[in-house]
Length: 323
Length: 285
Image (cartoon, rainbow over the protein chains, first blue to last red):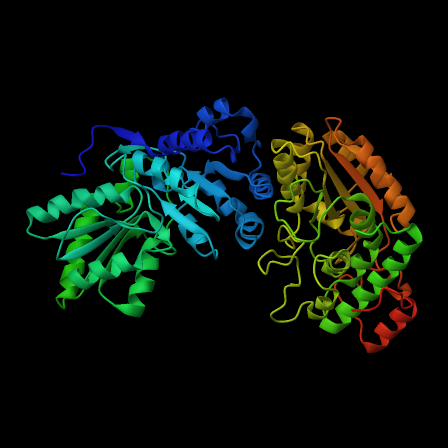
């Protein structure tokens, strides 16, 4: 398998390594953190470039404003805090001072989704993709593993404009090619298939590959595509795959409202309507628990993708979805 | 830019007040009260205090003093001052708040109006932005100063105090904040809506140097006090000017009330206002 992995690593650690690298390469890179330097793995950057690292304390709104201001003078600010505090808490600051003002700020958000685990729903934001994708001009990226997160950091530093980069807390299989260039807005084909297209993002990408194996054993050929960039969406890749398979599963660690699945449904409904099944949180808040337990309880696990694929295929053949 | 005398700048201030009234009348919307009250401070900054380059406008402003308007609703005075500084044609003031204009109701970079470096309007954000720009100047070894203007009512926003804490804690000393201290906000007197208490002591307790100006509508005084702020800057502390002004200054029936915060005069009121602001050699837009 092309997606074998030798170790599990945190996506946030990929962010930290990527940030250090772009910091070494580009003297205009600056970083800001709201009292979560170790959690965000920004300590290496802070140590290497103390004059370019700004500890703002527990004041996320101020952090977003300062980041916007730092761009005036040519800096490329990377802000770091949990996804909840990177978006919901500071929506108006991002909207006015960054997005509407067209500022070159990279909003880097860790601990997104249910896999944050035991801290519970206060911290498990499942609405952030929706919030960010609704802002005109905002690029929205959700990476799937350590390597991809690191490569995404190296890509967004060269993109002029605001970016929301979403990643997570736990160690997960590190399976993507460390040397694969990250191209914003270009989806990655992971498997070729005929029966169903599975579009996955973030931590659900590896689970989609596990589902692919199970489906293959049952004689179902699934095309798994990694939608690491939710905005701008790679509509060409999506249409090409769906034209072949005729049905869709979308899989994401996010509310079904406002997520990647909704973006794909919105696009396909205008050009090529096909049956689509959503593997996403069903308009709920999360709760405390271990990441794996939560993913299972909220139906974001491998069997959920397998079942969704079968339902999509059934509907394609004219069957009805009784779920 | 031409080096105007104080007397010339006072005449220019009258012209800018005419612009404010005419812009708001033309659009039949906008914020005349706070705009009239802030004429002197903006004239002092753009025509005496700041080193800045209207053309070609450069977003990064390297080597320039920068100004950020945090109480974004006073666009009439801001746009008039920018136009008369040479950032864009004075005739463009005709388009204020109209469809397809670069002169949006609140300041925006989106339409690329020269002179604007950040959107504002949702209050409380400009101090953070100004601090970021001041930090960029330090990183760039750029020795110029960053200024920002805030309404006093705006100080009720929590983000202001996050920024206040940061500026002092991190010694952002190439930065001067100005408070338009007119004791007026939409719902009435600031002291009635949500009292600010002793503002001087508050800023001092946060670690700022405070300069007070009881005569914020006297141009010489404003220039003198801004120079005092500059002398206090670059000494490990941020500086704030508490600039006491009168909302609606220059038009008698707009003074002493919050009623003209965001209301356009009708034709008769406009005539009455302009009668108090005689035409000047600078000419109307």
